[in-house]
Length: 214
Image (cartoon, rainbow, N blue to C red; front, side, top):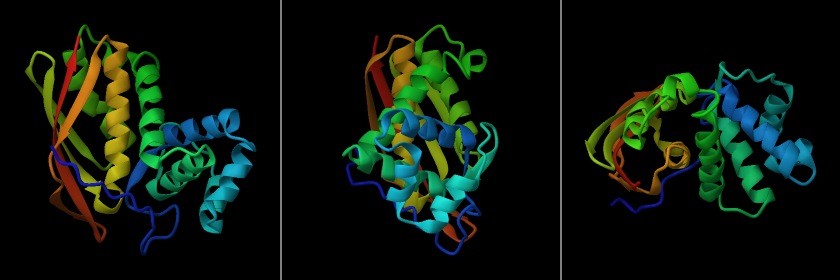
């Protein structure tokens, strides 16, 4: 199992804030905004101030986020970092936790029709559809290898922020599978592999084996 710490550097590089080539659906921003308003001391304004980046603060404060529209990924990673810092939680743990909550709720709510499944295995092989909806420039595939085991591949992810993508996947998958009765979900990731580039930013791909018990 690959154990090296995954990168999570949300610097915008040569792109202006809001114009980065890697995009995420507005539903992710909306989830963090709701969380900040309900759970963070000082609410949304305190989180924006904690980001400490005027351009990102302006983007977040001036944008009306729509669930199905796509937006620059960089600000949402800064947003998650500020939320994690506000509650004294490591970034990876915070991202996994929020993604797990989304997985538990969205497969029975927002994506109920598409994800209706009779078993955890059936659910698991459908999950790439959700990954590709959240991150509209990425690709994913998953196949059932045995009872309680799937094998998959995720590609097209920006190398500097690979950690954010994989933490989101770990949390969401665990939440979605637990919603249909799976327990003790485990991941075995490969080392990241080169996967070309997008607008001058290196991309990575990984393979994964996901197991669980009933």
